[in-house]
Image 1 (cartoon, helix red, strand yellow):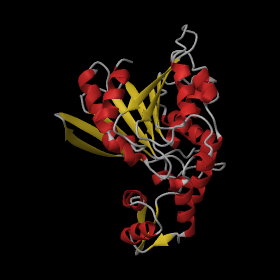
Image 2 (cartoon, rainbow, N blue to C red):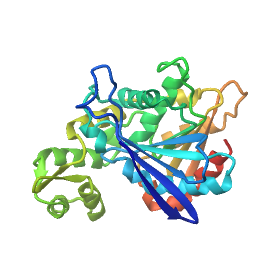
Image 3 (cartoon, helix red, strand yellow):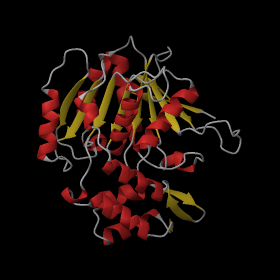
Image 4 (cartoon, rainbow, N blue to C red):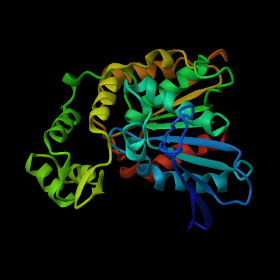
Length: 330
């Protein structure tokens, strides 16, 4: 069932639909269980003609991108009034409301996470998205989705996105030995904690006692949900660990070296992010300098100033200024 919420922002009404996949208890065996998602669009009085899909990062959920997607919808309604844009923010498997959905079977990897998105599009009877935007782990899910669309792996009618936005997500395999191992430490710590905790405050304090920063501890605490008199995780921790391992192991350099025709792959690198080795940056620059003869798509790289990895929190206005003009040009 869908609930509808209208909000006023920057002089524009914003229409938000909160939707879940079919109820597993009521679905037939032949009915596909799909990802939970929300729809947002500037309320212009006309149906949408373009769609952008947002994919969050590890241990996050679609709600992380609500505010930014609303701002993007509002901006596009002003700068590109001839195209009515719809934003869809999804909860990836093992995350958010999708963690409660049965039928999203293992292996929990980038391929199946991308396949979930294709199943959502097909099940809902939507046109294939014009733009797919992925942050961190979601960036690799987005790349796998685009790659599979271009190879007609989902459906002969599957159309590749015109733009693919990869937000502070290293496209190649990730060598944990070249990082500070913070993500691994977080996952190991969460695995050592009980599945239910007394309160969010207790968890935040416990994480800080173990040496994590206050901001990171509070973000982890925001991923709790009520379970009786206690709190429990809003994600499937073991499934998320498997997804992280897949994220580290997979590489999408071939996609960047030969982008599908008519597709632009836009990489946004946060200026203060610690996830980019010099050799990776140099390899990216070599892709953008190749130009193109029209037989393949193109790759562009954008530096987001004054931002660490959490691009939509550290500098959302700067990110909007990078993305909106390009998306409006479609």
